[in-house]
Image 1 (cartoon, rainbow, N blue to C red):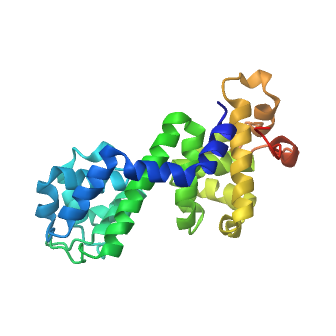
Image 2: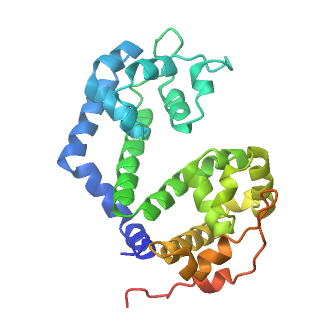
Image 3: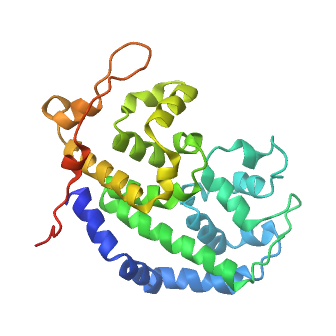
Length: 267
């Protein structure tokens, strides 16, 4: 199944898919245990000693691959965000910063927020369920997974550096805007300069423009996947570069033509 078809199917069944995740035996049990236990957490120690609760919070923040690193997570969660040298401020991965903000532990390890607040609990559960949905999409198709990640993250973009430091955001936008992947090896300021020439950040707040960028990325990804560079005209156009100074050759292609989708793709 192509990424375009897979994404269309996921979009058409999103609400049903999210509901199925919530009601599945595995996730329903995890959500129920989270609701029962989180209100009693008053310190970082309370969180860390309950493996199920700790794992739920980690998975909600897409940090399942870091569950084993409890010492690092403890130090990160008790970092003083006002100290520029603290661990949370030195980590460039936004997932850690999001978890630090959501949990709100003080440097002493005490809980500074109200974990019994139903609104806070629901936010965490929604984050957990959304993460399972994105993971399922990624298992189906890498391009689909990247689009779901892009949609989840793009609202938090404040400047081009937020894009460049995130693989999903930068990959989608480089591809959709016709910026060669090789530019990722350039100095960060040079990358920012190139991206600023190609992208109006205001477009990332426009649903129609976001949809156009996503469709362009998916169409190009489908066109180039599993095909050699020399036999793929679209890829040759998008990756045409000269060898001097990291600049790339501008090309003119009809994006509307290559991204056009039938109004009834399943008819």
